[in-house]
Image (cartoon, rainbow, N blue to C red; front, side, top):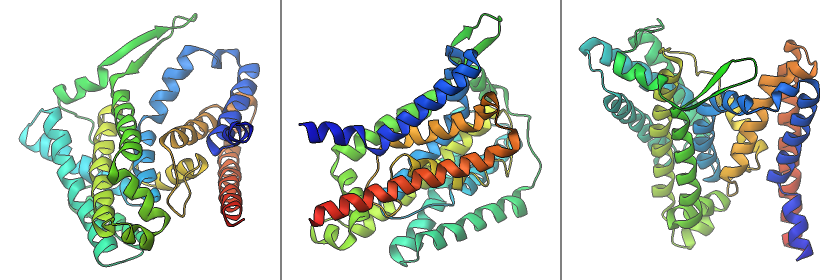
Length: 332
């Protein structure tokens, strides 16, 4: 019992939690206002889209792959959809999400075909699809940011779950869009833990041949993972457009490395077969706190990238060392 208890205290999730608590304490000492309810609301908004993308990336990495195409798919799907909506005056939130999801489904199928059927390395395949999606956005759809979001769709950005007014009479409002990553991540956690397909994703990520022998259809599972990633990337892109109240063909580009880092820092093994939703959420939270609050502890803005990079290197090193230790223990 003691051994199990100790192991729980040294998991990646536990280490990230300790780091978050220490960081919050330091920031709270420097700036007591940080330890208030308004911080939760501010961080929730900052993490909203990253949480959706982190869920997608975690799913793909657990299956033994990697996906760097989701920002480009999100940009293309949301930007193409909003252009169609504006052209034909279709002021419907449901249409926005559904049409973008169809586009995301198409790119997901392309990723699935290249990786599961043509056996291309996931990084190369998704990098190629990323360039296709990004190039198509700029070449065929344009480069102009669109801020004239239709009224009904725009109303979702002003829908709040609750508001909080602090002692300085500044009001913070919790957007209802936060329900999207919450519901998605809860469903994902349940799916991975309690369904046969979820266990199959872990199995093919750990060892494809062993999974095949155990009766799992590796190609089918890989295809489903990348198709789901495409659809969910589109949902993330639409949510971002509504949250920001403008559509941009480029705003999400370049976010893939930070998302992958957050997922790996949270304990997901880059080699596949292992990872949890809780760990990914903690990884996203840690990086969000670092990115948004380093100034409060006296770290200059231009040092933020350095500190974030340092945390990523340390976090991934801990994950790697733990994975190697567990593998060696199993051999013994």
